[in-house]
Length: 492
Ligand code: NAD
Image (cartoon, rainbow, N blue to C red; front, top):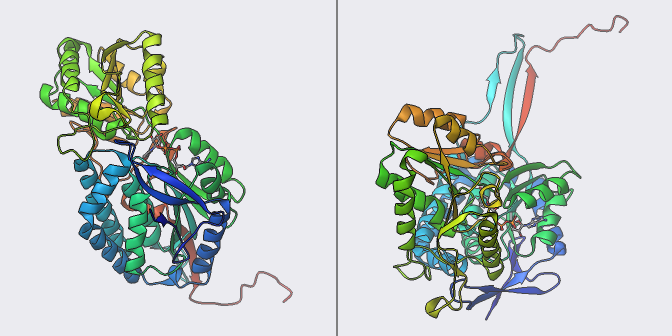
């Protein structure tokens, strides 16, 4: 099996210390690839190339039209390889193929969106009250950006980072997650074909606490953009203090999905399932707390449990599969620990909570869709991000109670409301302390709309014009159109 190298300075390069890592299929345990495993030394090399590309140009001084053309071309290449990329994503991450196809299309859309945005007006001019002064604001790239991504949306997260970073004229160093580098490697093969100049976009693979940390701490890196767990986000923020680099963090969540008794029953049921079980619950914005109004709970909750029992779990490559395996054995064990914690805390396990180990499940990391009822707000399964297919159901009396419970965690990433009363729905969304909210839907994500969290779910925003903004510096330029002696000092 050929080892894939790192993409540094425009070349596929063997890691300095020669490390390798086996990449496994979480559905079958089969070895998919052996890839290079970088060390901090490789991060150092990448930063050197990126600095040169940025400081000596021409990337930071290319016209926006040129950057846009490359990004448009990349989007086309991704689409032309969509089928292969989707299969690769499913084999590496485990999610059902229909979800991977969606992610690949979304990744191409993200590159295309920022290609378009690269050439749109940026900056402003001001009337500063002095007729001889023209004052303007221009936007410039920040410089060298370290970009660290998780394993749950490997290609899409790479797109969310690289597309705005490159559109803005930065030099980007992407570090893929340890377990899911395959679509990122393919993406860089496509980027090499498209012709991004050396050092402009580089790929590191390897451990977070060495390679990722090296990027976050490096004094010659100007910005670090991170998506991952809240605990890691804290470490990144600390590592970034040395040179006070710019930091954006997209972190975890424990998002509420609120079902009022006047909601369309079937629609709410569908989205309650989709909210938690899409992507095996390994989704930052998962609706992992279901808040159900007491007046409808007796009817809604048993129907939900019954529906969850019918979700088809299996290998994501099987077209019948509706929920795939968890990413690794270690993560499966972590999720199973939470099931035990929930039971010990006194929550009622309505369905699931079982490791699936028989027959076709024997070599994969499978768990059945899991629902807990009779929870209390202080339980760990209600407060902590499990990042798996485990739903904690909470009951509420009225609108005020729903808002109080919904906001009662340290997170604030997303939230949904289901009701036929749009005014009530809007009132609740306005009171949610969360960055991404939905009324009568759950999970749709748009390249055009800002993505990010309140509270401990992060800082800064990706996507939309906000996402480009996060990769730009802001400079004021003031021009005196009528230079005359100042006359401030009397004796000259
Ligand atoms: P993680 O924090 O363990 O790892 C994420 C990335 O950070 C990986 O590439 C890892 O190698 C790297 N890393 C780990 N330790 C590091 C360190 N000390 N310094 C620098 N880099 C380090 O997260 P994960 O388990 O890969 O992903 C799951 C988490 O990601 C969940 O909490 C989920 O909610 C979050 N997530 C958030 C969003 C969002 O947009 N808010 C999107 C997807 C995932």
